[in-house]
Amino acid sequence: MPPAVQDKEIDCFLKRGQYAERKIRYVIVMRENNTESLRKKARQEANPGACESRAARGGSPRAHQRHLRFVTDSLAALIAYVDAEQRFRLVNLAYETWFGRSRTDIIGKSVSELMGAAYADMAPFIASVLRGERVSHEHIIPTASGERHAVLAYTPDAAADGSVCGFSLTIDIVIAERRKLERDHDALLARERTARIQAETAARARDEFLAIVSHELRAPLNGIQSWAHILENHVRDSASGQLAQRALNGIRIGVAQQVRLIEDLLDVTRMMSGRLRLVRQPIALLPVIQAAVESVRDMAAARHIGIDCTYQITTEKIDGDSDRVQQVVWNLLSNAIKFTPEDGNIWLSAVCANGQIVTTIRDNGVGISAEFLPHLFDRFSQEDTSSTRRHSGLGLGLFLVRYLIELHGGSVRVDSAGEGKGAAFSVSLPLRSSRDRYLPVVQCEPDDITGRLPSLNALRILLIDDQEEARESLSAVLAGAGASVFSAASVKQVLAWLATVAKNEMPDILVCDIAMPVEDGYAVLRKLRAWDCGGVQPLHRLPALALTAFAQREDRIRALTAGFQMHLTKPVAPEELIVVIAMMATRV
Image (cartoon, rainbow, N blue to C red; front, side, top):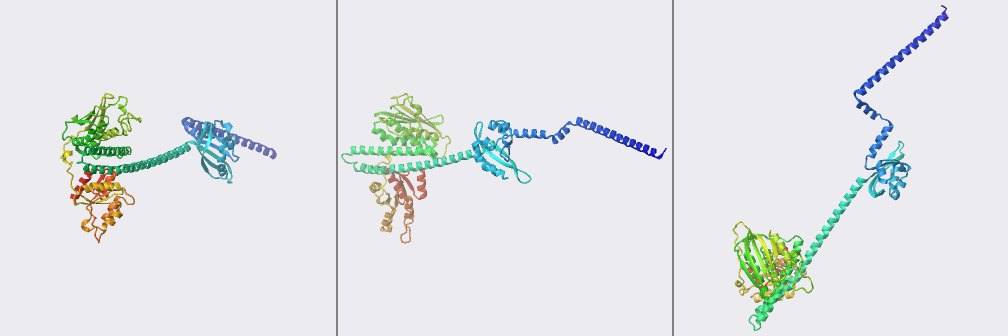
């Protein structure tokens, strides 16, 4: 075979070999691919979740977009993407609900078109976010159902070169309304705090005003009562004594009624402010009732009204405030006297029943109508409020009765068959069951003290009061009892007088008013006890009596704390004043 032919055949063989090799390789690769496909299918059938998870991780852009849409539409906040030209490019479902417009209608619109008048307030913040700043603010923006309070947050979308392509605009309603609620709550608390302070200030002003009114009303009564006492002693043996005694008795009754009205007003004020307190202790009720009866006998006698008492108690006790219980009985008796015609009768009884002491006061007076009976114990309640009414009063007595009895854990009820058929009031107070070492209070009979007042002979009394009428009347009362009295209107006058007094003629007792101009009674007492005379303080242990129209319990405590040994309230009964001074003199 020639060499040229041989070379050609070899070349064809090689080519056929190369083709065969490529074919073999193709078959091998196909088989390997088929085998891997079979293996992959087997793995999918054995663990389909793994395949789905991988598909989720390597999902298509369309799937990513669907997932993002699902997440943003699930949020309550409004989420949008706004481009650099301030046009909406993406909004979530909340935008549709908020503005009442479809998503396609919102996308492409400018912020100013969608927000309307609110855009003017948003514009500065949009300018800031387009400069690359993150900003937020609270604002009221329009909605399909009206305006709503919202928090608007702007976050810039910055490119690699630092330019801002757009920004996200998030509108949060829930946070904004929660903040608004918190602010409203804080404002409400502030208003409530302010209102409470104003109410407390008004209550203090009212209490101070009533205290001043009480002082101004009591002070003149003290002079009336003192002069009445002097006149009573002066005309006792004169020919016209009977008429004079009747007039003086009327003055005394009028003063007592006026004092009681003032006390009732102050008590109501204390009740309204929650400052009325009881001084509880074991007390025998019988002497308390008897003292109340004796205090109204003159009032009843003036109208020829008889008071018949039936006591089926002796030493039985209650836990209570004796002054307040006596006030209750006094109010009920005074009420019965007021509404009982002349020559009428009042019956009082006190019995023990079912662990209680029941005190009943019955009269044959005007009675109570069935319509008014449920309102009888209301504050300021009066059946007849016309200008032609027959009976005076403030309508506080029975209101105080119920309040005080309930403070003692008791009860009060009233029965009346109707107008013109009288009324019966029954007060029930819990009986003190335990026996103790306390003895019942012994009530002195009025005859035991009448006409036998102690003598103030040889006593030197220093009287200080800024009211001339009070000084004159009290000086006359004390001088009538045998005392030597020096009266002054101020501590300046007293100090000038003391400079002229011999050491053995210094005053024995100080009787001093509290409310006075320039220096009050507390300052006067301090100055007198600190007064220096030749290196000594002769008055540093001077007994002092506060005689004042400030009658509240706090006033009495303050006076005793300030150094006064006793505290008496104007108008004071002259007999009481004399007895108290005599008692203080025995302790010097």
